[in-house]
Length: 559
Image 1 (cartoon, helix red, strand yellow):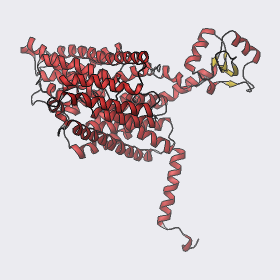
Image 2 (spheres, rainbow, N blue to C red):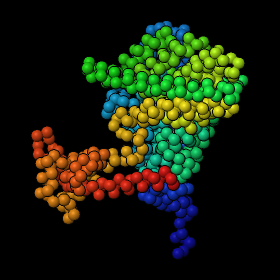
Image 3 (tube, rainbow, N blue to C red):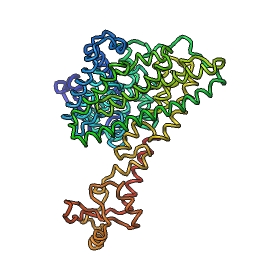
Image 4 (cartoon, helix red, strand yellow):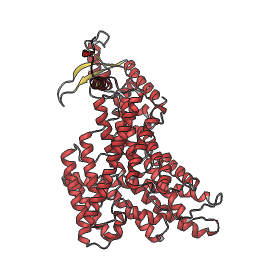
């Protein structure tokens, strides 16, 4: 080949880039490429979390007319009562209209949907509903909704990773790993907590600690933290007193009791949300209330409470800081615990959006301080700092709600910068999660999913069956190894059949009950129409599909 026909360096580079992109799209990323993709997703999710937080602060400051939203409730107490009432009502109305028009069910997407996407949808979530939910949560948190921002930022991050997975046609393992990277970066950028962000993605979202996923998730988590610190600096969210001492041995039993109490507080918070949601749904169905109006009704209730107790507005960092520094009296603490629990339940049951992590931090700090005030007054000679109980309580309630003792313990340390009192926090966290996990389905998110009829809390042996449609495993009637037609129709007449659209979760109990080799698969066209025979589901085929899925899951979790 002559020198004139040789491609230029620029043409060679462009060709290599095109070939690399096609290879990436059709065969998936290699390990090195995957790390670069993880970094890019981490940066994108980190900026999304940062812009979400800055946007909430800007809109909240404009709506309430304050310069520092960290002290919102102090400023709000000086505002006219009608303004405090109107803002959440208008926010709820806008939220309802957004969700009504851009989601199928009018419900905000949250961490539970990300966990379900990781387990059942190869790491994908709904992008259209996700964007609408992010906007709805943005308005809710800016207009006085009593929830947190971690739920929305986690789902925003999941939307970003879903888009990337579709572009590169990622398989299930790659999709879940990229989802974990996005979640880790979002949590880290939102709370300046790189260690906890990475572990949150592994412990809560992916629900395993596979070695192959650890490095890219850490890379993304660090990227998210760097983005946070470029804006806010290397500072903790909460400032603790200089002395936060623990009198060892004598005082540890008190933290065991604190953990049990916080476990019960967490259960009350979770059940209050579900109970209020059930009541709201029943009233909505009975009265025919349009679903877009439900958040506005919740806004009325929130505004009414905030007129007298503006502490419930927003995330509640000011009240949490007061609890962690011991600046609240016992009667105030008890009132705030009850009101904040009610406000969170109303906000979430009203379908307004937001997360439960930040509210659980506030409620936990308040509950811990209440316990500490009582304990130190009864046993002053063997008691350390009362604020240590608030710190331990904050971690204990949050860990029980999230079902994540490891990452929550670390995020408490990173939010406060206090690593010297870890033993007290770990004792309280372990007791609270041990108790609460037996009273709910392990966590708030898994209980949400369980209420939808998806059994993620029981492990892959339970939920994998729901991933296989009968029509994807059955043998069609033109298969030479399928069932005898006459025998199949006889079984249908005896009531032994399964719908083609059903899952193995429905089919396998039929095998156990009837002890047959196969089940006729039919299509039910109408209430009075005769079923149409489509094929036969053999017991051995169903078990093979189930075993392959279990083996693949085990291989991924131990890789």
